[in-house]
Amino acid sequence: MQKDQLLFTRRRALLAGAVAAGAAGTAGVLAAGAGNEPARPPSPVAGPPARRPLRPSAYRLQPMTGFGPPRAAPVRTPVRSAPLLRVSGRGRTMVLTFDDGPDPRYTPAVLDTLARYDVRAMFFVCGQMADENRDLLVRMADEGHVVGNHTWSHPLLTRLRRDRIRAEMARTSDLVEEVCGERPEWFRAPYGAWNRAAFQLGAELGMEPLAWTVDTLDWTTPGTRTIVHRVENGAAPGVVVLSHDAGGDRSQSVRALRRYLPRLLDSGYYITVPRRHSV
Ligand SMILES: [Zn+2]
Image 1 (spheres, rainbow, N blue to C red):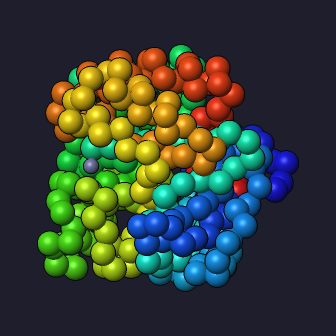
Image 2: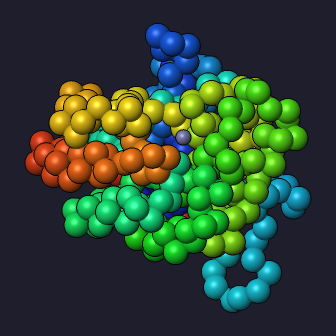
């Protein structure tokens, strides 16, 4: 990988992902973090996306004003048949993800903890929540976190018509772009319920589907210690952890993060965010 990927470049990533056969269907692997190696596809189900420029009508238009250097051409997003489940990086790389927010009761505390340890994470936001808490969306982006798309109102996509799925996803991407200046490059289906339309529409909107490896089940409020144990027991290179910063009482999730994050770092884990393409 290129040296310049050692530099932190928010929401710029080189996708080096490939999917591999897994127990529950298809397990995805993608490159994560800075200075990592591309994943080696164990099976030829899907390879890295072609790095071709998008059509002029594609979702991301080049800025028409300003005199800065031209931006790199965005990568075309492949249509997958299963979400990515983990990341592949050099060493003990892990990704923390927080869904359903932002929520002013919990998200600031999550952000504070991440900032305290200088760690970047992913927030799969719901448009409805984000619209009401734009300041938190701005803070996420300003502090280098990746803002992903978790639909507008958190519906079960498998029960929706295609045009409704598109609206749920597109409206959220539009809002994130309006507030943060960039469209989300990652999508996560509510309840982890994906279907073909979700994969197709997500790719159309320029987003890769990301699921998770370790589910803390924090939404069941099992107790802070249990959440901590689930993260620490599940910790391994490439693991993507699912937690929530909204959708109910998430005080356990907030407290758990304060405990497991320093311990993961002490154990030598590198907490990072996946990259899809370089600058
Ligand atoms: Zn959710």
